[in-house]
Length: 363
Image (tube, rainbow, N blue to C red; front, side):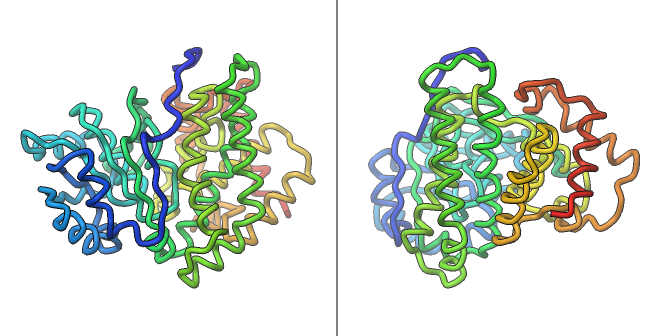
């Protein structure tokens, strides 16, 4: 949608509240009485019992289907065959790949989408796109939709009960909004949605630097404190608003493109989305030749909350082979990715050099 003045800034409604999962049926019933739920094994373990009870109390007819573990075109097609006639809503219960699968399904069927995140790990619950992968977990592309989420229900008690590493990864994914939106918006029309997207990204960045350490401490204690609530809003709602306001004028650039490339490495499949993006931020800073002081500040923040600063921090404790580097670069520079949003050309040679620089940094 580059060049378009198209805004899909937020869901129709976003609600954040401790214990909200117990009232989810009450909210969902205002929009439909027959729903198809897409979820994952761990997601349903985290929220399923209370959600099912809530749906039953609200008199909602629902079917639960667990997705296959990757957000793929094939999985969306499989689920499509299971949705019964008369279904009024698709409901995604879980993290990013679950949500993106439900989102693709909802848009394929032209049905409204309700999202119930069980982690604060990405902005997927509120964005009008799905990140698609192969069956092996390698990045493919991201279709952008012309409708956004109808309703997002965020239970901060559910989020607080999740392993804190997911929240740290979500912070990494969200820090990228400021770094990437500055790059994306350079040389683009400075319409008000673009300006608003970039300013939102700065608000997110400042909030995360101020509140992340306390929020993670509170998450470890499973306390839905104001600091944790602010970080959850930053990771889910405000992060999604950046691209929702400005689209390609301030969405993603090199950091997410490098994430895509990292998915070609088998060792990286155990690393979370936001961890790979966090590493991609460092590569983008190297590409931009940012000042050492800025890089030191960010890597210090990473270490304080447990984000990776080297490939070995994500389990790749060996040099990349020439073939692996070629594949990483090929996918990172794919026209189906976001490297073209950088304000200058990025070549395979310059990207490889930036990765080598990050690996050589001593800070």
